[in-house]
Image 1 (cartoon, rainbow, N blue to C red):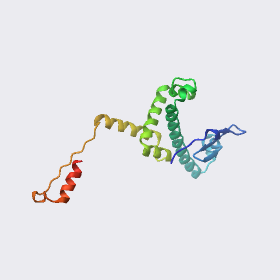
Image 2 (image 1 turned 60 degrees about the horizontal axis):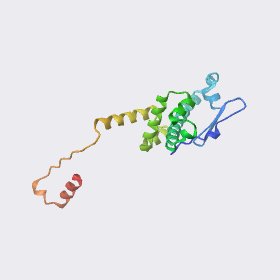
Image 3 (image 1 turned 60 degrees about the vertical axis):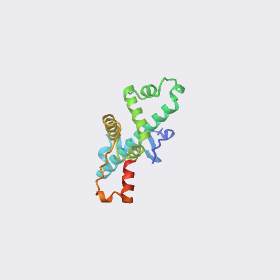
Image 4 (image 1 turned 180 degrees about the vertical axis):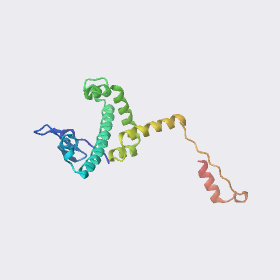
Length: 176
């Protein structure tokens, strides 16, 4: 499952409340219903629980979309078309975040292209952006500590079974 953010669907209503479309689902007036501190107290308990779950899924889908788009923009070399030396600099300036933060996001986006299972879990809302960072950091730590994983298999058998074709096939498969 891939998350797609249709930027053309982010528009403003008469009251300047955003209409947001994520992955084919439209959430008109989402801020008024779920994020407005002046109306949150009017929601029922079930609406609050449902809203929080919905917001979590939306946040993870948007994070997956942001990482995918940053990675793709960098891959395509769009920075020069935008008049900047790198996508990192352009995006940092556009969203007013430190370049280091954007560099980490781009690194994570590239890591996700090589780990589609984790990317899918982020897109589906199964895990959060911070979980992805932890998984990527742990993977890097393991690879640094043991760059070439090896396995050692010891096969113990009776000497009388040495001529067995089945045992020879198993031993041959283990040595490959």
